[in-house]
Image (cartoon, rainbow, N blue to C red; front, side, top):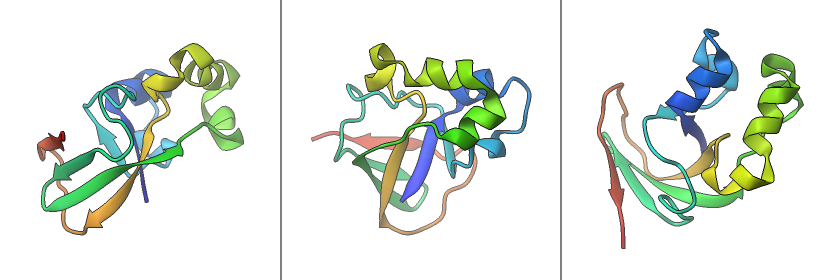
Length: 109
């Protein structure tokens, strides 16, 4: 699995710190909400095909250490749960190469 998050949310939470501190493999300019990307949705990026998994991506104690309790509380609030502000997990269906700037194609059924 790959962990991914919205790049704008990451930039807000990181407050100038490098994005690699999150530990996510992908930072996307994409709405990761349940409404936009329900479990099972297929994404194509570069030569890679990915599928949204049902496993929730939540903050942990390391997230709290790096970005503070208020940041974790904000992204974890029940009223924002379906927005997936912490991000989502993606399963690799077809391995390949992804480069910065590659278009994300969402395949809707």
